[in-house]
Image (tube, rainbow, N blue to C red; front, side, top):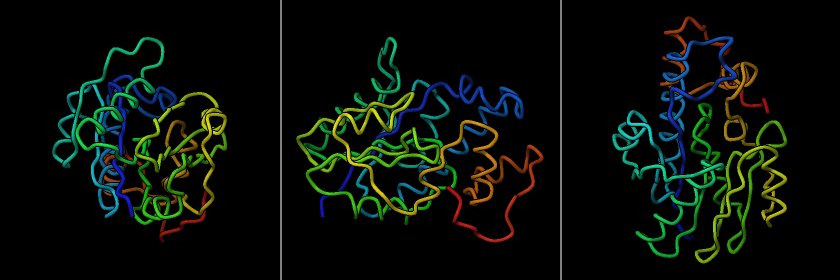
Length: 224
């Protein structure tokens, strides 16, 4: 089985998650972004088939945490109007410069309920020689984009209606029960969903510090 190299892109955390402003201050949102990123990285790097993780970011706190967790870090390139996709493409190019014709995974960085077993299953079912997409819980966004072909470009199309954009670019939507993988956090409703699923320890601790009690009494895994 070919190993896969993952790429994440994270912007300045003090500019992130504006749709959570009704719940959290700017400082709290930055803390939450760092915690969710940490839990996502911890889950992803526990997958044996994932050979490396590259994080593209301009944020020094994200960069420092990524290095602590064993990720390779590169600075965010000048991006113009499309910073996320430019950053992911730069990360993919950096991976192949260092590792050769690697298979690639672009993964959202705000998946606090992600389980390593979910991501491992995705890497197992995604066809070699193809581009695949995991559609998020809204049905319109993208949780992960996978290229199981060392010669094919990543072609990230994250943003509004990215699920359709990735399918239009040739990606096949993967089906599977991966609730933690499909649930990124942008809104208060998303936060409710991942708390029911059960978030990782860093997100759980951060939310507890903010005064949020846990929604779950047992590990429910059927939402999304």
